[in-house]
Length: 256
Image (cartoon, rainbow, N blue to C red; front, top):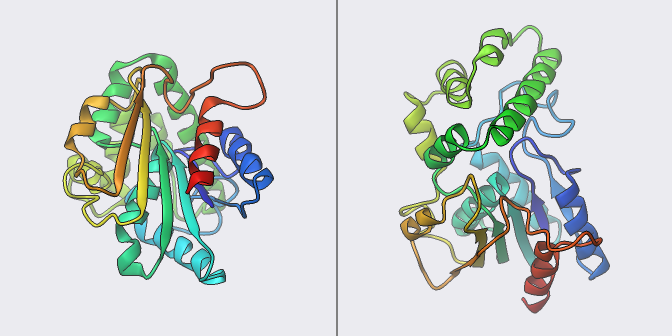
């Protein structure tokens, strides 16, 4: 199993550790993947992370696959990590990667819709991501002081303004809209998906609107589960040691 964390999370995020421990206990080999500029990785690459850097994630999964080509390889991801996992799945055939299974929890479907939902929704989510992104930018600047000065970027007052400035100054995309469309998984983006895949999301997710599910390219390989409650990657049904989503993913992957 390769586990993909969400935006501004890391391989050490509690939800990744919780699921990873459950998978280990069930007999899986587990790799927790850090995206660029997440976790302690800011010094490893000069270029800044953005969500369209899919090739390097495909490359990482391909290298993992090559460690043991005969093993059954599956992916699981949360939020942006679920988006990445599904995009890796859509590129797996061309990259020579054989995937058994993909499970994506509350994956980002249309980034433009998610960005607008964050701007209009409860401030706690927006402020949380802005706080963590600014902290990540400080770490990147400290690692590469001759390359970056994020004073203006970090000083923007909204996620939309921060993202637009990042796109304009640090990517080759001509506009914010082009960048956001670049990692959407709606439309034909998942048309090449071959591995059996499942999306799990919730009606009360404040960031990922279930209405966008109808815009997915639906094929036999992809199934969708929509729960009445669960929030964004929460699915907490008790104060016990495990969550519903951990148990559901373990059951799903064990069946596979």
